Length: 108
Length: 118
Image (tube, rainbow over all chains, first blue to last red; front, side, top):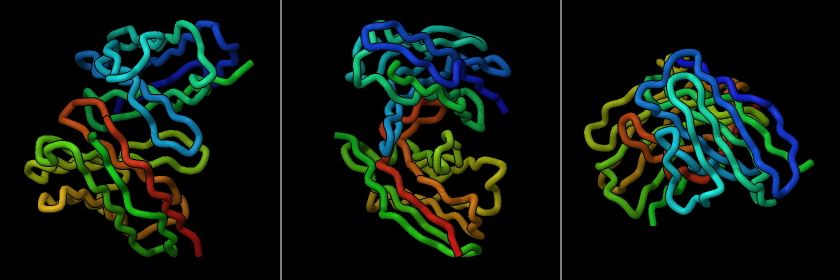
């Protein structure tokens, strides 16, 4: 089973700042089959990024993903108030399709 | 638009079973699969398994093997997840999501809260 470790657990930033969230895998994620999701309280997760760097339909271009192998990054270039939420990475290259434990992005 | 609508909240006693439904619309149901993910209160996301709506093939998380069954009804474009021998630590919000083999999860259903309590 591929274990995904996200860091930091909590990130405190202000609107307008740049956010960098990391996701490390215990073994290489095949074909960069890695996604990022955003979850707000009481709501289902929403797909942001798939295949490590492709933005999902309707996702603003301030969200970008990068990385390969065992190290992946989600970057939000300029934080908007609606971006404060919990972010999860997930690998879908090998079963079981595991999730990271999440990074909470909170307003400073 | 593509949409997954799940059944309502359930309260069950320990040892009972629960069956959650997920009705799909806006796409060809048999061209995709459905994954189920759960989230215990205040916790992260846990993948439970996957079913192909094309041929009914399944792949379950090892920790749930023997307690979970996923099925589909192609006549109504509905997927089902049944969990048996419920325990208190099965209390969670259960989500369905559209998937393809080795693909991302999108979209997700709204979630179904299952509470297991005596």
